[in-house]
Image 1 (cartoon, helix red, strand yellow):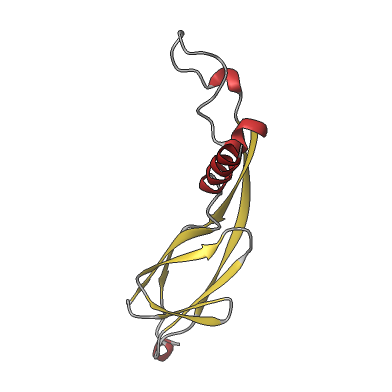
Image 2: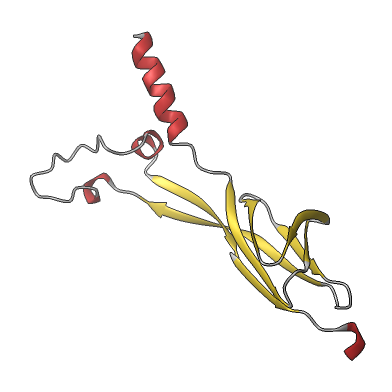
Length: 130
């Protein structure tokens, strides 16, 4: 019994969703500092950052001699329905979905969190041109 419970716990942990999402940020000219929610991220453009999926973010791009640009990244939940009868691929496949992960097995409606936009490109304007 203990072995079964430990196997189910490992299965549940393995199916846990990732809490971050990659966002690609680039600029022209490259080498601009990237600020996420007001704090310096430690990266310069171009870079790929992992941001928390379930919240909105403000990304600022700053380079000396150029105007600072800000972009909003919003959380956009997306729903997907998984029906057991649609899971079988071959006509000889048994209709009971033993291959589903634990979460999909009990809850056929999945809510996925997506960050939009997932790619940001900013052309920075020189402050001397204003």
